Image (tube, rainbow, N blue to C red):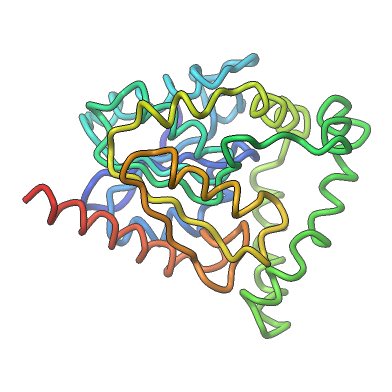
Amino acid sequence: MNLVDTGAGPALVVIPGIQGRWEYVGAAVNALSRQFRVITFPLCDEPSAGDAFSPAPTLDVYVDQVRQALDDCAVERAIVCGISFGGLIALRFAAVHASRTTGLVLASVPGPAWHLRRRHEIYARLPYVFGPLFLAEAPWRLRREMAASYPELAARWRFARSQIRTLIKAPLSVARMGRRARLIGRLDLAVDCDRVSAPTLVVTGERRLDHVVSVDHSNGYVSLIRGARGVVLERTGHLGSITRPEQFAAIVRDFADRRAREVA
């Protein structure tokens, strides 16, 4: 399996979002690696995942990939951080591999009752027809978040250029994204929440700025997972882990430090 293993400190697995490529959360990986030993990877149905490639994944296949990544890196236990769709994988991993999970971070994760909108369900079923339209809608959905995260126009353009470079370096597959999106609605996340015993942090952006998933629904994990707490990454919506990566890393570091004090 192709792995990224970078930084030093407590072990932290970062599971990427629906794009399937870790490069799209590269800013978060870089910031976190200054305080953690970060392990990340492409999701296993991406050709770039190497020998982990699986063309027809289930959530449990992704979960097994996390376990394999820990084994390959000779790490017994780690904080598991899932970003957006990756948070659902992190949640299931923490539920079934409690002994290997020192903490769980859910960042901008679709809520327990999340379902595709009717329009997006059609997009997901016909990805080659409607996928380009879905991607073309992204700037409109994210416009308020970008203005809040980057008040200066020049900064917004720098971020946009960085995303274009990532797209060229790590091309997206709308078909694989569509399969992952359809998978979400078939999950019984409440059962997974009930099985989580690790300390849990739920990170969201501001309610008015996340136009990808509902912040209120994401916060449902706070009540469903015993002892979970929530925190808002200000001036962000869905993309806070990459638009304000240093602030995101500081939140995760504070969570890890608090957990270390509690077990000391």
